[in-house]
Length: 71
Image (cartoon, rainbow, N blue to C red; front, side):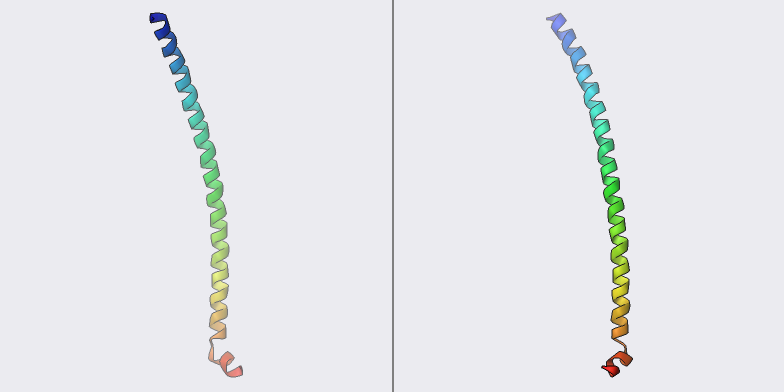
């Protein structure tokens, strides 16, 4: 029984360190994935803001009295 208990403790320690290592590496991979998603989101946000500015300027131009009188 004592021998079995010692082997169990050693095996448990090895499994624990392997699990911690795997979690650490998996966490790094997940963080890299999140960073790429954040960068992609920032690019899309910049494009959306540019389009919004263009639409606002076009709306402002079309809403002027000169354009309405020419129509």
